[in-house]
Image (cartoon, rainbow, N blue to C red; front, side, top):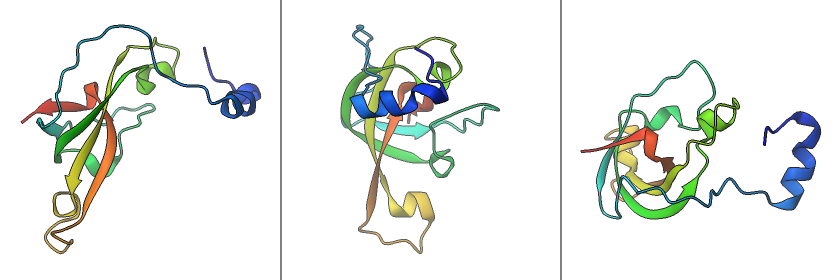
Length: 115
């Protein structure tokens, strides 16, 4: 389904989900160390810029969802897993960041590689 401006309100109010009922093998497991790709498409992406080129650890696998980068442009669902990935503050913001703080971000298969 293409999300057009005239249906945003209705879709948001019904709690629509991008979850896909399709079996797709996960590329990563809980505990895997990953590297976020330096992915800079000219079009829509859900990958935050501050994560590109950073290392993290997979903490949870949420299951299979439509990949937003293709789905937003009517290029297909491209079903894949989405994971909770933990990053240290120092990995993201350098040595002046707290050595105790972490950030968890939802990251899709296509944005990551194993370290």
